Length: 158
Image (cartoon, rainbow, N blue to C red; front, side, top):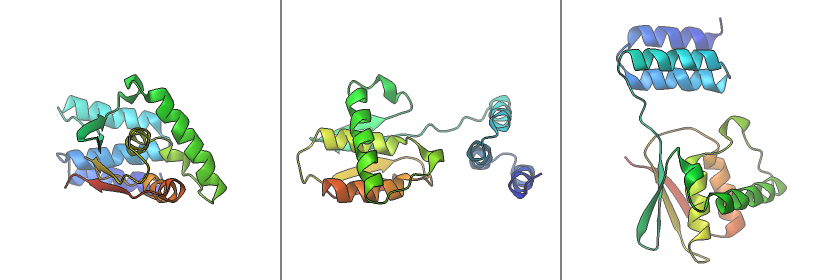
């Protein structure tokens, strides 16, 4: 058993009613690609009536808030947002960006793409997200800011 697995088991024993702990343990298992363990933790959460808060990111464009949820593929600009993100990915790699594979696509990136597509050059983008998540988007946002020559701010709701 890995140290991370032992720690996850112990933390769950100490805090069996803490939704955040279950989410942390589930995310740990996902990071190490133990999908059966992810399913097991989610099953326990469901059994005891806990629900994980879904993540979302919001960007303001032309005075309106636009939210990106897990159902992002149904967005009317999904294809063009993905094309822009693919183009940015190539440009970022060309100037030294090395992505972390476990953070392939994040709702923050979709909000950034939407903001870039729907605002004029030089417009500052403010992205607000509801969950504190560590991820590659911090580093990616720095590179995107350089490429598009715009201020892009990402912050948590709190």
